[in-house]
Image 1 (cartoon, rainbow, N blue to C red):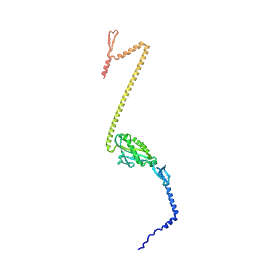
Image 2: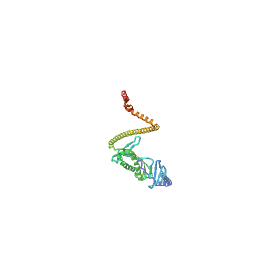
Image 3: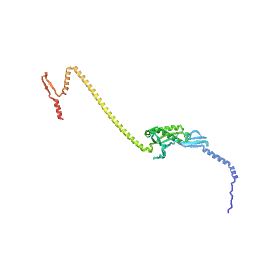
Image 4: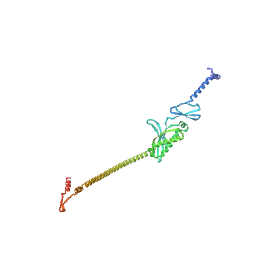
Length: 336
């Protein structure tokens, strides 16, 4: 058997003697390490899309540091950063499970966010997205405990108020753009009141529709509305056609009346001019003018008479003329 060797304890006196001999070197190494550690913690880097705020003994210094290398007091200062270039988004009534050319969405479990009551006491499911950026880094980091939850609460309260002030038809069709615009303004106002440091970029309504249980009834209502609109448009076209036809007849009657008026006026002017000329001739030669007027009048009268009788001088005898008008009329009838 091998003899048992007892373990030898280290010689502590030798160890301390060695430390004593090298204490200057050890001191310099420790001092160097401390200097390096302080130097490493005296600077901090801010990325291109970030801003940083420094707390000195737990109190903000009041400065916001942009991209680059900045100094700080080690141990005393704390640095907090936030991405101020990124546009963040919060979704309500749904969540995006995959953002791609064909994005996928999950709507299950978020009905409580989407279901709202309109002004005419109808249920409607509203899905919307809030896009925002960090406008004030210090307020965003230190003024509000949970900024995202605050934005959610404010956005949901504002949207429910706006939907509740409008009818179901207005929310689903006419006033969607107006609701989004007013929601953006109201949210920004409320978030500014609590110094959230958030700027709302825009509010987008993704989908506004009736709940799934009421979808069939809503489709029937839409079909009835479409038929009603078709009937209204048909009646409107008939009204326009009737009005245009009446206007055409009116314009024709006006044109005919104006033509008759112009004809009457011109005829009257011609007769007046003719009378003036006859008067001038009468003044030059009264006897001849009287005879001419007499013959002209007799020509008109006799041309209308069917039977003509001539009286001899003194009325002793008469002579009946041949009824040329009858013959002419008979010949015309025979020709037909």
